[in-house]
Amino acid sequence: MTEQIIYGVEGESDEFKAAVASAQATFKYFWRELSWEARRIVKGLDMAAVKMSFPIESDDPEVPSVENMWVSEIEFDGQSITGVLMNEPSWATSFKAWEPVTLPLALLNDWMYVRQGHVYGGFTVDAIRAAMHEDERLEHDEAWGMDFGEPGLVEVVPAAEGQQPWLLSRTLNRAQDHQTLAVLECTEHPMALNMRDKIEEGVSAQPQVARDPDDEGWLMLHREVLAGNYTVVDALLRHGADPLLPNGNGQTSLALAGMAGWPRILALLEGQSAH
Image (cartoon, rainbow, N blue to C red; front, side, top):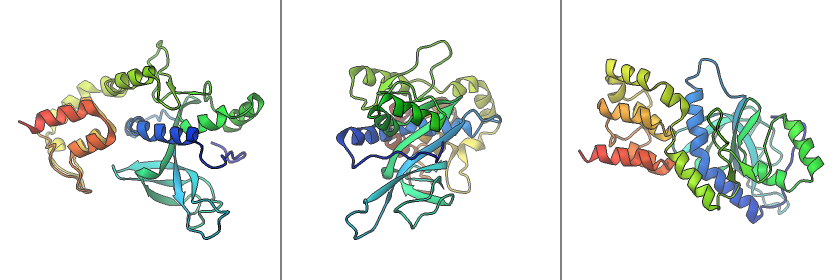
């Protein structure tokens, strides 16, 4: 990401608001990718960041009520997003560049990760790019040094090698979008499939991993549910993880699955908790 050229929008059009809503609806795929990136010895992402709406308190009518800025080094606990602010604010002067920030999930404006130069997410960026003339869009893309794809279409996860990309409209309002998202919600991350046997062996050998909370009061189950990792959740449940035990924030795994929007995992948890 570059700070050489900064693009913004005047106000928030309905189109831009729809892009924000799409980013919020698909944030779970960003967090799932980061859950696996944390496991990688050799990192697979060029960058990963979220854009947050920072509230501004001012009596000046010329000052906006929020300033949208990118944040990197992301952590997520099911309620709040924590990271490092990537640029110096223009209006939200109580925040400083390269300092830690924590904001509620509701203030998420966009998300984006980049793998081998290709962008996934970036719904509001796409809205901005779509409004540009072709030469301006080219300048924008060259400044960022990334492949954003065709304007109007967004990818949220990489396609398997040899398969067509999973293309969504920016507003997620097509029947095809709903069908694609339904498939993606039931599609495991490739690393989960590759590590299935290793995960099973590890939990079988050390069942306390499934049952004991960490120093923050979280079970491994809580974290894997939040990230949408069905294979890992299934293994943990079969080795004694309690779906009704709350984490340090008071959230059960059932609550986290519902909040994050993983219906297949929610059904798995509900079936286990009914036993």
